[in-house]
Length: 142
Image 1 (cartoon, rainbow, N blue to C red):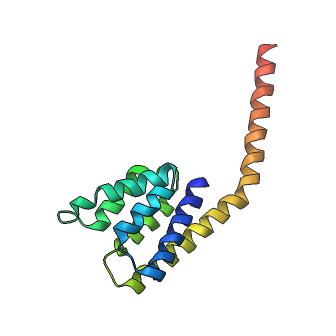
Image 2 (image 1 turned 180 degrees about the horizontal axis):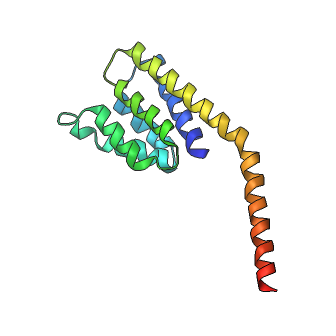
């Protein structure tokens, strides 16, 4: 859940900065990397570090490769949506980038809300399994 929150926050900041200043994507990603932590920071730093290969590799390829390498705590659907976003960032007009950011942010927000709703059920299940395992261990010991 934390990674989705972090990614969602970064995408919303990126969208806001693009709307206000239309600053270059590398500059924005570098600023976001400095404000982020964990897997999100790793992802953004690696994307920024790979920008020197832009002539030989497309931005979407760099984005996709680094997402696969760094964002290991999210589901494949979420990762796929981020990869699609990378295919639009920096390559089309500003309005297309903003639409893609809004769509991806909305998608991640929905996934985060699903996880928040499912958390109490998963927690009860985990506690129940722990109690069952402890009971089984006691029975086996005696």
